[in-house]
Length: 478
Ligand code: GLN
Image 1 (cartoon, rainbow, N blue to C red):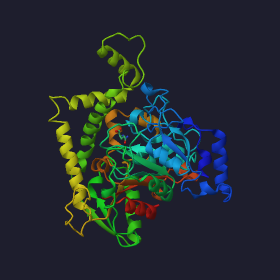
Image 2: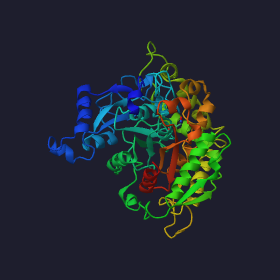
Image 3: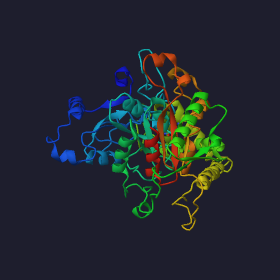
Image 4: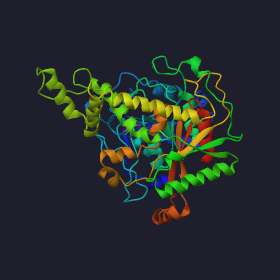
């Protein structure tokens, strides 16, 4: 019923064959079993899945919402796209995003901002950078969507649009054919309206890809997987350092409600300290731009991307500067400059190296609170048996902001939206955002009148490779 209210979202930037999509969507209700016997055996048969526009597809252009890649068409499908097609999914189209994944509100796009509107006249932020994917799912324009999550870009939009958004452990899903932003953090993520749908897409994509050098090899994969199940008594960690003073009281109350709910399900609650959390955001905004400045150097008008007019024959410094100045957006240019500075000889020790150290401390912090050791770094004899199975915290410090309010934010205020999502990214851990109802007294009267329940995103974070348990706890919460 909620779907009818969504209009004019600017969620898609390219759309697939309309007749096919409409026919399939219709057929989904009827579900005739005998018509397509082969397709019926495929796990994602006839599922409409939207793809963020920084993931390569042969069928549509792939622009990362950047003018420098305008009209670029990839000669190949990304591995994740091929896997979806092989499983019978139909690619609905490409979704709007912040240019190259840099942003938290899907406003930095050559296609204009994504607009979340649940009733006429309302324009909210859909979160970013995978805001188009989230809005497409929230409005029922697809069954699931792929996004990318470098520092929260799947989880934050999921939280703002009242859907489920999952960032798997780093290295599980192939990044081959996914346009790099900060490759040591980049992860393909999945958005859908329920955890079951997210899981069925994840199961399809969670396969070793020899074409991606950071794909976790099969020998390591076989060591993942944990014994505990959600129907046993789990210990849920409450990271006290996430209870920051700027946390919206409505989000805090929703967090407490969710914790009580898990307690009522029979789980134990345990407060934990993750003291380096408060430095994670600064470290992220050093590391991600540093990697971006290197990854985006190839868009220079010679190797990749468009070239500015009238500069052929000029020295390369002029050609590069004109091209990049003309075709890269302000936020992308800011990150490239920031990254080039923090990697420069005079600044690297104070910025980049320090941030790498903080990143290690954040990872150590997580390892010190989880009951399970980290399978990538741990001593195999380190059997602890104490500690927590998963952590529960909010996904974002506020409820969904108005688009105008989001667009008025300066860069630093925008970065603040990511404060709860970047720690798990720095540590490469699986994390999912699920919508949790906010308390009755916090619901806006207008939305209540319209029968719309307001939610806040709650984030479940697990130990590396413990993606299955994270999904199970999420399912219990939803
Ligand atoms: N908002 C964060 C950034 O701008 C995260 C983006 C992402 O995860 N792609 O870097």
